Structures are given as structure tokens and as C-alpha cells.
Amino acid sequence: MARTGARPYRRNRGRVLAGNPVCVECGQPIDTSITDQYDPGYGTADHKVPYSQGGTDALENLQPMHRG
Image: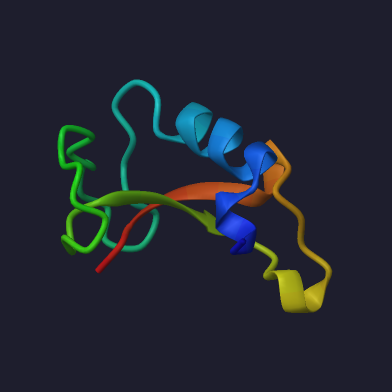
């Protein structure tokens, strides 16, 4: 299973995208009604510190971002 499929990531992704999230990269609102994960506008929770550098799925390490 991919790391982003893990329960802690999924739970915290939902928290990061709750309300009216704004993409940290482009500054535009994220449309949480988009359900196609391959759509560039799909909202995801980006890791501030990547796994490869010791990052975790903790809420404080995730930030809202568009997929594209």
C-alpha cells in the first residue's frame, strides 16, 4: 500500500481539507467537491517535510495543495 493510503494520512488529509482550504502553492481555493484524484484541481495534503527527509503523516506536517 502506498504511504498516502495509510490511515493516519487519510484521516489528517480530511482535516487539512476541511472548511475552505487554500492551496499553499497557488493561493487559490481548493474545490473539495472534485472527486477525481487525477484532476489537477483535486485537493491533496502535501507533506512539508517529505518522507525521504524524515517527514510523517502528522497533521502539522501536512498542508493543502492542488494535485496539479
